[in-house]
Length: 100
Length: 423
Image 1 (cartoon, helix red, strand yellow):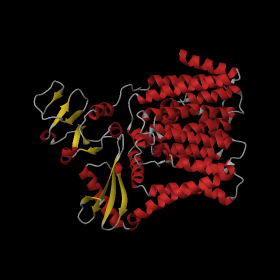
Image 2: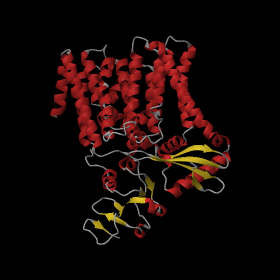
Image 3: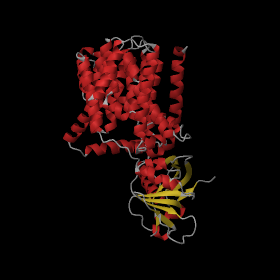
Image 4: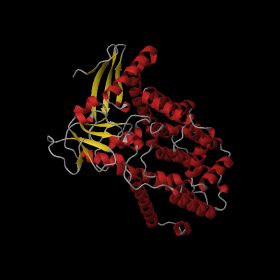
């Protein structure tokens, strides 16, 4: 019984994992393809992290383009973590809350 | 001196009788008692930065499998203790797996190998820590167990275990030679073998590519060791290897690995040793243990004078325990945050200076790095270094704490109290 489903279970886990990872990779693709964008994004995100008092480990990238990035900041602590969404403009360096 | 003698006599007594069902149950309970004690000891000083990272599911550097499971228990007030006990239990009760591996050896050798596992420095000091290395070592032991099994194991399940191991911690890759042989000797088709071996590896590479923080962590860990001299690196790796099996098991296990002439075991051993040299952390020493067990199983002739080896091993373990700097006091983060959490004020906690994730774990409020501009949002400020500008806001300093801690006032301040100091 267990032997019969081994490949189905393995396949299902691989497909789900690959799906999630490819979606993330798709989001970050501009960073891998554009060296200039990668440098600008890195400098601006690090400056924002320092200015806002964030911890780098709480920052995740939701979306990125040549104009700017959508960042999620998670404050990890005991209890429900606070997750906030921000848009970061690469032209002005301004950080604003995501539209609801 | 009496303690190792007692243990040795107990083990020899156990070896002289066939364990009845009730005997086994009693032994399980006894081992569980040891596991709980070790977990309680590890919990005395609070959580360390890496432990906090896993408990809070902070997404670096390791993949999410184990840390998301730990985080799923966050709703429990005793999350930390529970995870410690579960991990300690897995590591201590793994001795049954060691016993099962040694089923074809004489009873004396079998008991000696079990004693080797239980009294290894790495097991004694890492049971109850919330780290990925003990979990990876257990997964390594499971691969070793499958490697020595006479019947064929379903390839799909091995592939799934390989995937789970890699998504628990990257260090599972150190057991790659064993996994390769395990997969390759399967009677399944060539294509299935390639899929079982390569797909989990490709997925973990994909995971690294999508996590810039993981890449940054690797670079940072490698960079820290690059600054050390070759002698220091060799000394660190050697002492870690020696500590892993309380010296005796380390020597016996390593000799057995090389005398077995099994390339997959030697390959894994060299990979672990090389990894320790490149990216040294004391807690990685436990990764040697499954290989020592595998070595003894593959070349049991190395265990000629088993009772002497076991007695020496227990003595070495007791010696390590006696010279180790045991910590019985809770860390600063726990003491400070207990006071800060009592404040009924709303707001974030600001920390000035470098700090680890344990501060986040102990806090019930979001933690930010100290910036004077954020003071208006803060309910408390912890100054691990100077906090410029704090005196312009209505905070009072808590006395009797090892760190400088400021808490926002509840009511407009009037007269100083004895327990607080004002700037």
